[in-house]
Length: 90
Image 1 (cartoon, rainbow, N blue to C red):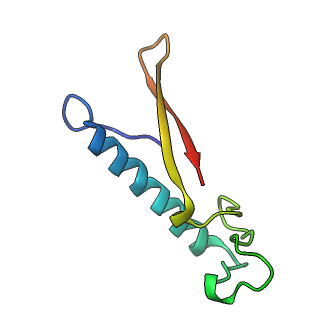
Image 2 (cartoon, helix red, strand yellow):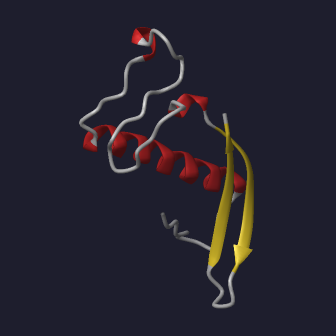
């Protein structure tokens, strides 16, 4: 996914909020496009983790609320394009 700044860049707070917004969008899109829906936490019997769904992203294992952004590595390629590599933990 691409992020674009409307000024001269992002503050730490802005970039974290944008990343969070994108993850929320991914999980929402997964739920909209899946025919196998996420089993609600209170109905999970044998496993606490999120079941695998078959939406656009095939998300499984962890609910959005389980995720934690621990680091953001920033790289610039030869053309000057900036890439972020996220370390997401649970």
